[in-house]
Image 1 (cartoon, rainbow, N blue to C red):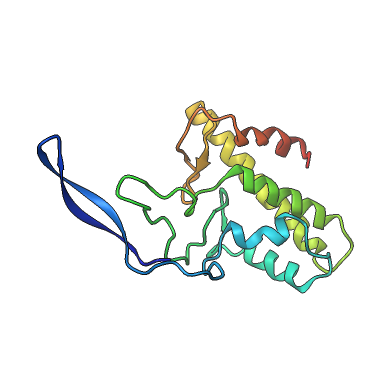
Image 2: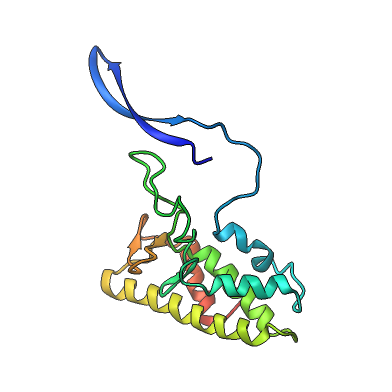
Length: 185
């Protein structure tokens, strides 16, 4: 639900009044399809669930390459720029986490799927191959630039400038750069 806001409240903490922001739900969540385009929208593609001649595959490839949605020069962002939640804070002290940043683990799944569909006969093979080559080059450039300039690999990357953010040094899923470079999917 988007019916959430931060509200300032005063609390007695150790005998002293302290003001803090509290997350307040104004509209209770209801079961529904996710109304935002992001990584979750790509899972039929990422998990290779679509036949190579599927119209849905063509539509997902088109959305994937749309730079107003997930495509950025640094990798696929986690949430479309068109979403009302894009880069929005969860709470006053909890900055956006999966709301626009580039995550290497999901980009790896995208590369793996694009590599797969690019090797399958069908009407979308060429588009998948082209998207694969562009995305791979963007990701490798982002990771190499950060490592050369700052000496670290990061947990996530800013979708607007490619700068590493959050945890560093981070060799968890960002270590997938080795498999991306070697084209091992």
